[in-house]
Image (cartoon, rainbow, N blue to C red; front, side, top):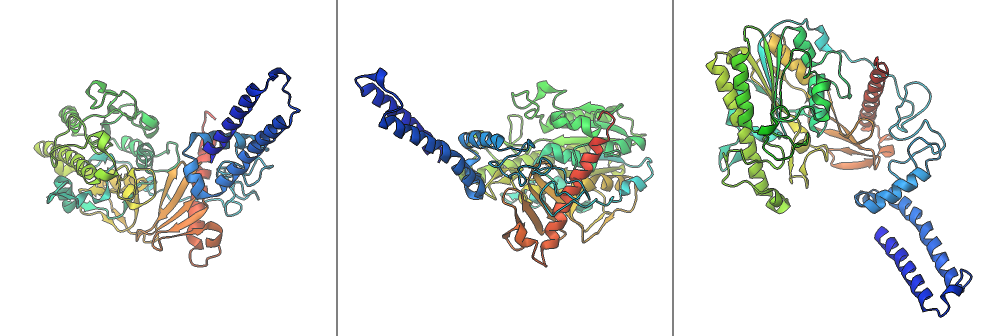
Length: 521
């Protein structure tokens, strides 16, 4: 549409200039001629059509989905949106979601809905309700020394890695053995499809973007644990290291930035820095030779093997003869992409095996809790996408969670914010039963302030997903999208969407209150 409008405008100017040049008396040409009047009307018509077409596109999800990927549409819609922002709240009538109260600066999409003030700031479910304070069970645990802890995060690890095979060979035999001797959660999930937010949720035990007063590292330090960070990525990316306590006083810190000359890719950008699994194993072995294991130790390891493009020049070919070149990663080569990915998981599995060998040789394994989980899943064109963060489904958000503690009982959906308490309870030998059948895990695509999708996943894996762009609700067990306002009238399913949106509003309200009350504010 916009290409057509641009062509029409250009053609109009072209023929106008051509007309002027063909006249014998160019200087006498004025806007009073019939021809010039026609062209002026045509240009005015085009200028009037642009906002009409833009608004039409913004109202239809199918057209908007494609148009928003075009620079021309974004420039035009953003410009018109600013012109129509009559109440100066940052939202107009041409972007999406739209401002539902164009003359009220308090009401707009992504506004904080202040509970019990009589105003529905975000436009959903009327005025927000003051959320109840959920019990933080970690605060009931007295800090004390326990077993050593090794927390391993696998980049882009799919939940099916324990059962995956390539040419009849399991891709993760070490992790399979560890899961068999301990426990593997069948319903563990990332809250987001992004690494930085997943790590913050894991360490800070919260989805809001602020450091919780009692994060995992803070609790362990208060319990007398010595903390070591050994990461294959740059943990300063997204301010993870700073916000979760990795840079606390007394922490031994090593990541891809501190060993930048050992990176596996040329780029020095924070998002691109990677170390090989062999380099992380080497650093781990140096660390355990230097650490005093008469004191409880906590070591965080991060393996980047399965990060796109799923291979590097230093990676061993455990399961494949050839890695897929980056230029060949596309839908028609799905099997090759998948094989290369599983080889990357095998590389991480090898590294975990080396960690266990080192612990066993030093007679430390039996006194160490090992926890392995993914930061998020990875779509390998299974659902039409490659990567993560696009959608809320099992492929992109269901993750492995393995603990070498057979006493743990997990019979409920587990989110990354729960993992810290599981770790602490195992290390301290406390009861570690998770069996709330009515529990849900909150998930989102985008940010809390401007989400594209939010979801609840239940004990049986059923999801309720709300799409902010189309204002529709998806019920996974029904494979059905329904208009939000229609669902609110449904006596069977309305409760699910109300609880989901209220959960989102509560998270935003809590984040707002914490940030508002920070000393520097």
